[in-house]
Amino acid sequence: DGGITQSPKYLFRKEGQNVTLSCEQNLNHDAMYWYRQDPGQGLRLIYYSQIVNDFQKGDIAEGYSVSREKKESFPLTVTSAQKNPTAFYLCASSYWPDPPNTGELFFGEGSRLTVL
Amino acid sequence: SQELEQSPQSLIVQEGKNLTINCTSSKTLYGLYWYKQKYGEGLIFLMMLQKGGEEKSHEKITAKLDEKKQQSSLHITASQPSHAGIYLCGARDSGYALNFGKGTSLLVTP
Image (cartoon, rainbow over all chains, first blue to last red; front, side, top):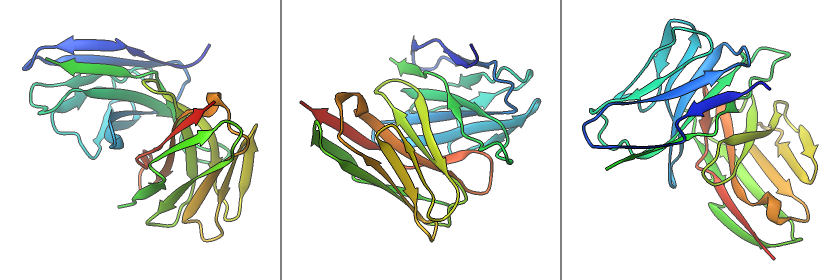
């Protein structure tokens, strides 16, 4: 079955450590996205990628890094520079929003990162 | 930049009652997406509206985009415990990513 797989689902790290969250999709989507979700804040865009080897910063990119070496994969690294990394992270992918595609995002199940 | 305001922030309804969630945009909407999220899980796509006055239904959930394309409503008829969760509206601004509202948390009581 096609879908988006995020791993790990839960992750605990000590302050000052970098962590990498995995996101893989087999939907043949061109675009991939990373969002962060905090209670009462909704979803905020961290990074997105429209094509392999290219990505753009979202609203809250500071302290995060990404790579897009393969169409299927878009890993997110939470660096030690991120001041408040404890959050729920959601990865998504989509086709271009060009007709007949409606461009909806398909989401993974999320990764919950807790920094101790 | 585009802002999406959802109301109410949270809602508690008795099973069987109807309810409405609103999403208002600071700019004209060229595509409005509704999602549902169960607590601690990913978002599930419900439906997308594009044209002014457009209305779509899926099971007991109906969404409508107003003629001016700046407001959308999501209506649930005869709510059930399975409808509980967070409902989010999303829309594209100038790029390919979706901006989202802060969500409406729905609890359905027996």
